[in-house]
Length: 599
Image 1 (cartoon, rainbow, N blue to C red):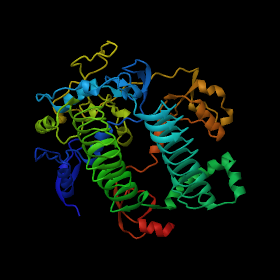
Image 2 (image 1 turned 60 degrees about the vertical axis):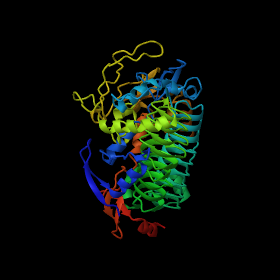
Image 3 (image 1 turned 180 degrees about the vertical axis):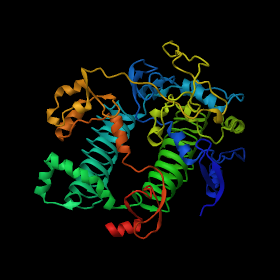
Image 4 (image 1 turned 30 degrees about the vertical axis):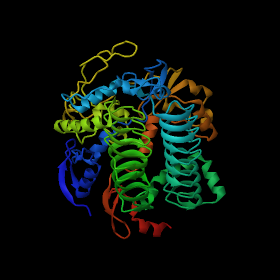
């Protein structure tokens, strides 16, 4: 049983949060040691939510743009908009030997803050325009690997012929889906496993030829069903004959009437207090094969960790997001993969990395401090190479300097991120209103031209391209940055309001490929591509009325918020922690009651 030893007030949101004896043991365990002295990581100054919000403001998955490569000057797809002051190289050029990150190395200046010096280095060192690996005809994607003939796919891997998706793995011919795995020909669905031909599905597995299903498994030919298992030919959770089912599916008016009753089903269906299986002494949601986790979400095969999301094979870590495949003893970091350990305050450090402090996108490297985009390096500080002895002498001095400025133990300020807050994952989980409304906002990253950074084409950044006037310590950095860049309106023959589109796909002309559609929610125009139109026609689906970004947000709303509530099992009245708030109408059971009731 953990013991609370300190109650603190978050310096951003002013909420109270607790520090336990186990937390302090973890901070001591992961604190770095140099010359037989341990440099303790202090307890956090932000609450868990604000800590995650600060990290997520560094992860841009979905915002991509056309711009010029700062090496070849060819037009490329980039997650850095054209108005950014950061250099961006096409991904294959970035990985080449045409440049060397060590060439940008510099001495540490003890008269200035670490974050100020790191920010200046991040502006100078070229960035990979997109984070991709092994893609074929899938350039309009980001944070992806092993794609073939995919379009606008993000944070996904090992997929073919998929369009408009996030977090897809091993899928084929799926459109408008989020968090689906091992699926084929699914549409407008979220959180599916091993499904085929499922439309408008949510939180279901091993289903085939189903539409509008939720919390179902091993079902076939089911329509508008909630929480059924192993059934065939069901409508509104009731069995029907094959002929009745097929007649209903071909009657658009009858389908519409049935869907009006679909939402009411969840008030009478039993749900388990979390999604997942085989967990022990763990709290959170979407957990699979986990032990001793607290406040964990979308995590599998992990143990002994706290405040983690999107993790796989993670052990003894805290405050981690988007990690996987053997991570140990890491803290306050995100987007790192593949067999690594003891990384503190790091971003996108991948493939056998260890003992990294405050590093950004370093690959197969170890014992580095404040470095950016290094590959196969050791004992570097601010991208400058040192001997092992010199490194171990200088780093403790830098840590002591950071203690004096209040930076040691703090993650990079969100306002240092190369992305606007509204371009990042943070906006999805912690939405905020635009900072440029309502006068001066102290928490917005206010820029001034303290220096002029010349572009590679010798065209200096104009006064509209701001360079940060960086304060001395983390406490004076404003909270967030905001992007006001808007991509050019697509060049099309005409823009048609969504409500003017024919409802029957057979009435959609080929010429729609030359139009733009005005989103019915945001009024933002979007286009239909050829592969997409072919999919809608094949499956007799209507043309979407909403912009792809809005469709993504709609799917994200299907999941419960990542917040735990205290409530009791509706059968045995056992205390449980769940993402279902107590005032919600669903019937929620603990795991043992759910298994006895459903199975």
